[in-house]
Image 1: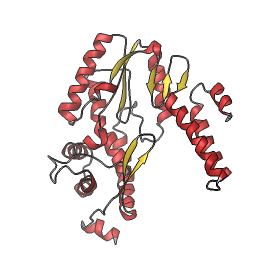
Image 2: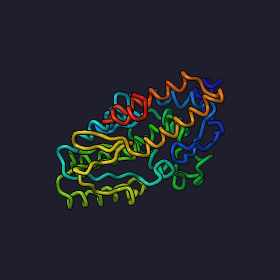
Image 3: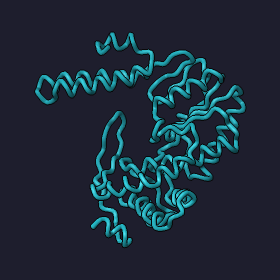
Image 4: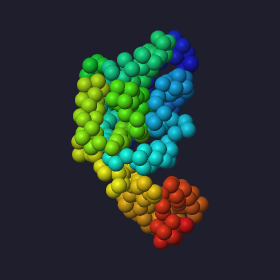
Length: 292
């Protein structure tokens, strides 16, 4: 039935199930029905190889062969050769993505009009939970939870990547979703770049730079990025990460004593955290926590 609906153009997206998670801050998650998740994955699998090749090298989120740890390696390499870093992000990124702008970006990348119509239907499905009107001129926001939402969001900020790399001609630039770094040796020049990036986000993508979190730092003092603090020759886990892990260990102890979690489940979770923590200089910390 789903295949027939997709073939004859009668497919309609189902109703999302919406709930909140707290990890560590509150996030609103939208889960599509199973049949619609099948469509999201199928569409992603078709368009991802076509569009990913247009991304710049230093875009690291939700891409094969990229990810958090490679983004950290690259940022540390840039840090070593620059005195300053503009660390910036976008305020309320996913809820602010403009449907009309996103569809124009997709139209530049996809030639098949039947596929464009299906992709537009997936974008429009977000209106049932994020609101914002029934026209592209009014609709904003993508739900966290869809595979396509992550991909569309990454594509949306690919426009910023091109602006920074090819118009501003910034050599040392790196982005992980809406969290981006611009390095340089001239603080005044970085202030100008920040103004230009802010204006581009506002005028071309209808987004706002998060002013409180978008600052220029002296690289000698380290940079907080993706849960780590990066220095020239070493890294540390940010204190919030360590605090959450200690809290998780206490919770595991309670759940285990009450028969609600197995030793294997605890071990799997701890091993994941240890593997992640090893991307920083955490030998002493892991020894103190008893997980080395």
